[in-house]
Length: 374
Image (cartoon, rainbow, N blue to C red; front, side, top):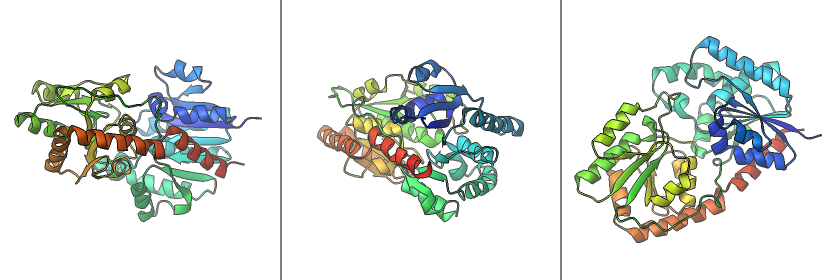
Protein backbone atom coordinates (compact mmCIF):
# COMPACT_ATOMS: atom_id res chain seq x y z
CA UNK A 1 0.00 0.00 0.00
CA UNK A 2 1.37 3.43 -0.95
CA UNK A 3 2.31 5.97 1.66
CA UNK A 4 0.31 9.16 1.95
CA UNK A 5 1.75 12.64 2.36
CA UNK A 6 -0.21 15.79 3.12
CA UNK A 7 1.32 19.13 2.17
CA UNK A 8 0.03 22.07 4.21
CA UNK A 9 0.77 25.36 2.44
CA UNK A 10 -0.91 28.74 2.85
CA UNK A 11 -1.44 29.50 -0.87
CA UNK A 12 -1.71 27.20 -3.88
CA UNK A 13 0.32 29.62 -6.04
CA UNK A 14 3.23 29.26 -3.62
CA UNK A 15 2.89 25.48 -3.75
CA UNK A 16 3.05 25.59 -7.56
CA UNK A 17 6.09 27.86 -7.64
CA UNK A 18 8.06 26.33 -4.76
CA UNK A 19 6.93 22.76 -3.97
CA UNK A 20 5.32 21.31 -7.09
CA UNK A 21 8.40 19.41 -8.25
CA UNK A 22 8.79 17.92 -4.78
CA UNK A 23 5.17 16.74 -4.87
CA UNK A 24 5.47 15.16 -8.34
CA UNK A 25 8.72 13.48 -7.28
CA UNK A 26 6.85 12.07 -4.28
CA UNK A 27 4.21 10.63 -6.62
CA UNK A 28 6.95 9.05 -8.74
CA UNK A 29 8.32 7.52 -5.53
CA UNK A 30 5.01 5.86 -4.74
CA UNK A 31 3.40 8.47 -2.47
CA UNK A 32 -0.24 9.49 -2.61
CA UNK A 33 -0.13 13.30 -2.40
CA UNK A 34 -2.76 15.68 -1.04
CA UNK A 35 -2.50 19.47 -0.71
CA UNK A 36 -4.27 21.47 2.01
CA UNK A 37 -4.13 25.09 0.90
CA UNK A 38 -6.13 28.17 0.10
CA UNK A 39 -7.17 27.15 -3.39
CA UNK A 40 -7.41 29.68 -6.20
CA UNK A 41 -6.87 29.48 -9.95
CA UNK A 42 -4.35 26.63 -9.75
CA UNK A 43 -6.68 23.88 -8.51
CA UNK A 44 -7.37 22.31 -11.92
CA UNK A 45 -3.67 22.33 -12.89
CA UNK A 46 -2.58 20.78 -9.58
CA UNK A 47 -5.29 18.12 -9.87
CA UNK A 48 -4.20 17.24 -13.41
CA UNK A 49 -0.85 16.12 -11.98
CA UNK A 50 -2.46 13.57 -9.69
CA UNK A 51 -2.44 15.74 -6.55
CA UNK A 52 -5.64 15.95 -4.53
CA UNK A 53 -6.54 19.42 -3.27
CA UNK A 54 -8.48 20.52 -0.19
CA UNK A 55 -9.39 24.16 0.29
CA UNK A 56 -8.12 25.77 3.50
CA UNK A 57 -9.76 29.15 4.30
CA UNK A 58 -6.60 30.69 5.75
CA UNK A 59 -5.94 34.43 5.98
CA UNK A 60 -2.18 34.91 6.33
CA UNK A 61 -2.49 38.43 7.72
CA UNK A 62 -5.33 37.72 10.13
CA UNK A 63 -4.81 37.87 13.90
CA UNK A 64 -8.48 37.27 14.68
CA UNK A 65 -8.55 34.52 17.36
CA UNK A 66 -11.83 32.99 16.14
CA UNK A 67 -10.67 32.87 12.52
CA UNK A 68 -7.37 31.29 13.58
CA UNK A 69 -9.13 28.66 15.69
CA UNK A 70 -11.21 27.77 12.64
CA UNK A 71 -8.01 27.42 10.59
CA UNK A 72 -6.53 25.07 13.21
CA UNK A 73 -9.76 23.06 13.28
CA UNK A 74 -9.49 22.61 9.51
CA UNK A 75 -5.99 21.18 9.90
CA UNK A 76 -7.15 18.66 12.52
CA UNK A 77 -10.25 17.70 10.54
CA UNK A 78 -8.45 17.26 7.21
CA UNK A 79 -5.52 15.30 8.66
CA UNK A 80 -7.97 12.92 10.31
CA UNK A 81 -9.83 12.57 7.01
CA UNK A 82 -6.79 12.05 4.78
CA UNK A 83 -4.92 9.86 7.32
CA UNK A 84 -1.45 10.65 5.93
CA UNK A 85 1.72 8.90 7.01
CA UNK A 86 3.60 12.18 6.71
CA UNK A 87 2.68 15.85 7.04
CA UNK A 88 4.90 18.41 5.31
CA UNK A 89 3.99 21.96 6.40
CA UNK A 90 5.55 24.95 4.64
CA UNK A 91 5.64 28.53 5.97
CA UNK A 92 5.12 30.14 9.34
CA UNK A 93 1.34 29.86 9.86
CA UNK A 94 1.04 26.33 8.45
CA UNK A 95 3.94 25.26 10.70
CA UNK A 96 2.45 26.81 13.84
CA UNK A 97 -1.04 25.46 13.18
CA UNK A 98 0.28 22.00 12.37
CA UNK A 99 2.21 22.03 15.64
CA UNK A 100 -0.84 23.14 17.64
CA UNK A 101 -3.17 20.64 16.00
CA UNK A 102 -0.77 17.72 16.44
CA UNK A 103 -2.29 17.15 19.87
CA UNK A 104 -5.40 15.86 18.10
CA UNK A 105 -4.00 13.49 15.46
CA UNK A 106 -1.28 10.90 15.01
CA UNK A 107 1.06 10.49 12.03
CA UNK A 108 4.39 8.74 11.47
CA UNK A 109 6.30 11.96 10.94
CA UNK A 110 6.04 15.71 10.49
CA UNK A 111 8.34 17.96 8.47
CA UNK A 112 8.17 21.69 9.12
CA UNK A 113 9.79 23.69 6.32
CA UNK A 114 10.62 27.34 6.94
CA UNK A 115 11.00 29.56 3.90
CA UNK A 116 12.77 32.04 6.19
CA UNK A 117 12.30 33.46 9.67
CA UNK A 118 10.62 36.47 8.11
CA UNK A 119 8.30 39.02 9.71
CA UNK A 120 7.63 37.29 13.03
CA UNK A 121 11.26 36.73 14.01
CA UNK A 122 12.97 39.68 12.33
CA UNK A 123 10.54 42.60 12.45
CA UNK A 124 10.81 45.21 15.21
CA UNK A 125 7.10 46.01 14.93
CA UNK A 126 5.05 45.68 18.10
CA UNK A 127 2.78 43.10 16.46
CA UNK A 128 5.76 40.89 15.59
CA UNK A 129 7.17 41.13 19.11
CA UNK A 130 3.76 40.21 20.53
CA UNK A 131 3.45 37.16 18.27
CA UNK A 132 6.97 36.00 19.17
CA UNK A 133 5.93 35.67 22.81
CA UNK A 134 3.56 32.86 21.78
CA UNK A 135 5.42 31.41 18.81
CA UNK A 136 8.76 30.68 20.50
CA UNK A 137 7.29 28.36 23.20
CA UNK A 138 5.27 26.56 20.51
CA UNK A 139 8.42 25.93 18.47
CA UNK A 140 10.29 24.67 21.53
CA UNK A 141 7.53 22.26 22.52
CA UNK A 142 6.84 20.83 19.08
CA UNK A 143 10.50 20.09 18.40
CA UNK A 144 10.71 17.85 21.47
CA UNK A 145 9.00 15.09 19.46
CA UNK A 146 11.38 12.56 17.96
CA UNK A 147 9.40 12.26 14.70
CA UNK A 148 9.55 15.97 13.81
CA UNK A 149 12.22 17.70 11.72
CA UNK A 150 12.61 21.39 10.95
CA UNK A 151 13.95 22.27 7.50
CA UNK A 152 15.67 25.63 7.11
CA UNK A 153 17.06 27.19 3.95
CA UNK A 154 20.18 28.95 5.18
CA UNK A 155 22.75 28.62 7.94
CA UNK A 156 21.98 32.04 9.45
CA UNK A 157 18.42 31.02 10.33
CA UNK A 158 19.71 27.85 11.95
CA UNK A 159 22.10 29.84 14.10
CA UNK A 160 19.32 32.20 15.22
CA UNK A 161 17.09 29.27 16.19
CA UNK A 162 19.92 27.67 18.16
CA UNK A 163 20.90 30.94 19.87
CA UNK A 164 17.28 31.53 20.94
CA UNK A 165 17.19 27.97 22.31
CA UNK A 166 14.29 27.17 20.00
CA UNK A 167 15.70 24.14 18.23
CA UNK A 168 18.57 21.76 18.84
CA UNK A 169 20.91 21.02 15.98
CA UNK A 170 19.86 17.36 15.70
CA UNK A 171 16.29 18.41 14.85
CA UNK A 172 17.32 20.87 12.12
CA UNK A 173 18.03 19.94 8.50
CA UNK A 174 19.57 22.43 6.08
CA UNK A 175 18.11 22.19 2.57
CA UNK A 176 18.97 25.26 0.55
CA UNK A 177 15.83 26.48 -1.11
CA UNK A 178 13.21 24.93 -3.37
CA UNK A 179 15.61 24.36 -6.25
CA UNK A 180 15.18 25.34 -9.87
CA UNK A 181 14.73 23.55 -13.19
CA UNK A 182 17.84 24.28 -15.23
CA UNK A 183 15.99 22.97 -18.30
CA UNK A 184 13.19 25.50 -17.90
CA UNK A 185 15.43 28.41 -16.90
CA UNK A 186 18.25 28.64 -19.40
CA UNK A 187 20.45 31.47 -20.73
CA UNK A 188 19.89 33.56 -23.82
CA UNK A 189 22.11 36.29 -25.16
CA UNK A 190 20.83 39.76 -24.31
CA UNK A 191 21.17 42.54 -26.88
CA UNK A 192 19.76 45.67 -25.28
CA UNK A 193 20.70 49.10 -26.57
CA UNK A 194 19.73 50.34 -23.12
CA UNK A 195 20.62 47.95 -20.26
CA UNK A 196 17.74 46.62 -18.16
CA UNK A 197 17.97 46.07 -14.40
CA UNK A 198 15.14 44.11 -12.77
CA UNK A 199 13.89 43.35 -9.26
CA UNK A 200 11.78 40.14 -9.43
CA UNK A 201 9.92 40.00 -6.12
CA UNK A 202 6.67 40.69 -4.33
CA UNK A 203 6.31 44.41 -3.83
CA UNK A 204 7.15 44.54 -0.12
CA UNK A 205 9.09 47.15 1.82
CA UNK A 206 11.42 44.51 3.23
CA UNK A 207 12.24 43.26 -0.27
CA UNK A 208 14.19 46.49 -0.62
CA UNK A 209 11.89 47.90 -3.28
CA UNK A 210 12.43 51.49 -2.12
CA UNK A 211 16.22 50.93 -2.09
CA UNK A 212 15.94 49.69 -5.70
CA UNK A 213 13.93 52.77 -6.65
CA UNK A 214 16.52 55.05 -4.99
CA UNK A 215 19.27 53.35 -6.99
CA UNK A 216 17.27 53.89 -10.17
CA UNK A 217 16.67 57.52 -9.25
CA UNK A 218 20.38 58.11 -8.76
CA UNK A 219 21.23 56.49 -12.10
CA UNK A 220 18.60 58.51 -13.99
CA UNK A 221 19.61 61.73 -12.23
CA UNK A 222 23.23 61.11 -13.27
CA UNK A 223 22.13 60.69 -16.92
CA UNK A 224 23.07 57.00 -17.04
CA UNK A 225 21.37 55.19 -19.92
CA UNK A 226 19.51 52.39 -18.17
CA UNK A 227 16.02 51.05 -17.40
CA UNK A 228 14.88 49.73 -14.03
CA UNK A 229 11.83 47.48 -13.78
CA UNK A 230 9.92 46.16 -10.76
CA UNK A 231 8.51 42.71 -11.55
CA UNK A 232 5.86 41.54 -9.11
CA UNK A 233 2.68 42.56 -7.32
CA UNK A 234 1.99 43.75 -3.78
CA UNK A 235 1.00 41.01 -1.34
CA UNK A 236 -2.05 42.30 0.50
CA UNK A 237 -1.79 39.51 3.09
CA UNK A 238 1.70 40.64 4.13
CA UNK A 239 2.15 43.52 6.63
CA UNK A 240 5.07 44.81 4.53
CA UNK A 241 3.02 45.19 1.34
CA UNK A 242 3.62 48.43 -0.58
CA UNK A 243 0.45 50.32 -1.58
CA UNK A 244 -0.28 50.30 -5.29
CA UNK A 245 -0.55 54.10 -5.19
CA UNK A 246 3.08 54.32 -4.05
CA UNK A 247 4.26 52.08 -6.90
CA UNK A 248 2.35 54.19 -9.42
CA UNK A 249 3.86 57.36 -7.98
CA UNK A 250 7.39 56.02 -8.49
CA UNK A 251 6.48 55.16 -12.09
CA UNK A 252 5.05 58.65 -12.68
CA UNK A 253 8.30 60.18 -11.43
CA UNK A 254 10.05 58.36 -14.28
CA UNK A 255 12.58 56.38 -12.27
CA UNK A 256 11.22 52.85 -12.64
CA UNK A 257 8.78 50.77 -14.61
CA UNK A 258 6.34 48.50 -12.81
CA UNK A 259 5.45 45.38 -14.78
CA UNK A 260 3.40 43.62 -12.12
CA UNK A 261 3.23 39.85 -11.83
CA UNK A 262 4.43 38.01 -14.93
CA UNK A 263 3.39 34.50 -15.91
CA UNK A 264 6.44 33.97 -18.14
CA UNK A 265 9.44 34.79 -15.96
CA UNK A 266 11.87 33.11 -18.39
CA UNK A 267 11.00 35.81 -20.92
CA UNK A 268 11.68 38.49 -18.31
CA UNK A 269 15.09 37.07 -17.37
CA UNK A 270 15.99 36.89 -21.07
CA UNK A 271 15.21 40.60 -21.38
CA UNK A 272 17.36 41.61 -18.40
CA UNK A 273 21.06 42.43 -18.14
CA UNK A 274 21.30 42.06 -14.38
CA UNK A 275 19.26 41.58 -11.22
CA UNK A 276 19.36 44.03 -8.33
CA UNK A 277 17.81 42.38 -5.28
CA UNK A 278 18.26 44.52 -2.14
CA UNK A 279 16.08 42.38 0.13
CA UNK A 280 16.49 42.80 3.88
CA UNK A 281 16.31 39.06 4.68
CA UNK A 282 15.46 35.85 2.87
CA UNK A 283 15.14 32.13 3.34
CA UNK A 284 16.66 31.40 -0.05
CA UNK A 285 14.99 33.35 -2.85
CA UNK A 286 13.79 31.23 -5.76
CA UNK A 287 13.84 34.29 -8.02
CA UNK A 288 17.61 34.50 -7.60
CA UNK A 289 18.00 30.80 -8.41
CA UNK A 290 16.01 31.33 -11.60
CA UNK A 291 18.00 34.43 -12.51
CA UNK A 292 21.30 32.67 -11.84
CA UNK A 293 20.19 29.69 -13.94
CA UNK A 294 19.59 32.16 -16.79
CA UNK A 295 23.21 33.39 -16.45
CA UNK A 296 22.37 36.73 -14.89
CA UNK A 297 24.77 38.50 -12.50
CA UNK A 298 23.19 39.59 -9.23
CA UNK A 299 23.65 42.53 -6.86
CA UNK A 300 22.18 42.09 -3.40
CA UNK A 301 22.66 43.06 0.21
CA UNK A 302 24.91 40.78 2.24
CA UNK A 303 22.03 39.20 4.16
CA UNK A 304 20.75 35.74 5.03
CA UNK A 305 19.57 33.72 2.07
CA UNK A 306 21.06 36.00 -0.56
CA UNK A 307 24.62 35.19 0.44
CA UNK A 308 23.85 31.51 -0.17
CA UNK A 309 23.49 32.30 -3.89
CA UNK A 310 25.55 35.44 -4.48
CA UNK A 311 29.29 35.13 -3.99
CA UNK A 312 30.91 38.55 -3.83
CA UNK A 313 33.04 39.42 -6.85
CA UNK A 314 32.40 35.95 -8.31
CA UNK A 315 28.87 35.80 -9.70
CA UNK A 316 27.78 39.22 -8.51
CA UNK A 317 28.25 41.69 -5.69
CA UNK A 318 27.24 41.50 -2.04
CA UNK A 319 27.06 44.98 -0.55
CA UNK A 320 26.69 45.99 3.10
CA UNK A 321 23.12 45.94 4.38
CA UNK A 322 21.20 49.17 3.69
CA UNK A 323 24.27 50.81 2.12
CA UNK A 324 22.49 52.41 -0.82
CA UNK A 325 25.67 54.08 -2.10
CA UNK A 326 27.45 50.72 -2.28
CA UNK A 327 24.39 49.28 -4.02
CA UNK A 328 24.54 52.04 -6.62
CA UNK A 329 28.30 51.59 -7.16
CA UNK A 330 27.92 47.82 -7.65
CA UNK A 331 25.07 48.21 -10.14
CA UNK A 332 27.01 50.90 -11.99
CA UNK A 333 30.10 48.68 -12.27
CA UNK A 334 28.08 45.95 -13.94
CA UNK A 335 26.25 48.40 -16.20
CA UNK A 336 29.57 49.72 -17.48
CA UNK A 337 31.19 46.32 -18.01
CA UNK A 338 29.32 43.88 -20.26
CA UNK A 339 32.15 41.33 -20.27
CA UNK A 340 32.04 41.21 -16.46
CA UNK A 341 28.28 40.66 -16.62
CA UNK A 342 28.77 37.71 -18.98
CA UNK A 343 31.58 36.23 -16.90
CA UNK A 344 29.62 36.46 -13.64
CA UNK A 345 26.47 35.18 -15.31
CA UNK A 346 28.17 32.00 -16.53
CA UNK A 347 29.47 31.33 -13.02
CA UNK A 348 25.92 31.86 -11.69
CA UNK A 349 24.53 29.07 -13.86
CA UNK A 350 27.42 26.74 -13.03
CA UNK A 351 26.68 27.22 -9.31
CA UNK A 352 23.01 26.40 -9.82
CA UNK A 353 23.77 23.23 -11.78
CA UNK A 354 26.17 22.04 -9.07
CA UNK A 355 24.20 23.03 -5.96
CA UNK A 356 20.61 24.11 -6.55
CA UNK A 357 18.78 21.91 -9.05
CA UNK A 358 15.26 20.96 -8.05
CA UNK A 359 16.22 17.30 -8.44
CA UNK A 360 18.95 17.68 -5.80
CA UNK A 361 16.60 19.52 -3.42
CA UNK A 362 13.85 16.90 -3.84
CA UNK A 363 16.31 14.08 -3.15
CA UNK A 364 17.53 15.79 0.04
CA UNK A 365 13.94 16.34 1.22
CA UNK A 366 12.87 12.75 0.63
CA UNK A 367 15.85 11.62 2.71
CA UNK A 368 14.36 13.63 5.60
CA UNK A 369 10.98 11.96 5.06
CA UNK A 370 12.62 8.53 5.14
CA UNK A 371 14.47 9.45 8.31
CA UNK A 372 11.28 9.96 10.33
CA UNK A 373 8.79 7.63 8.67
CA UNK A 374 8.30 3.99 9.60
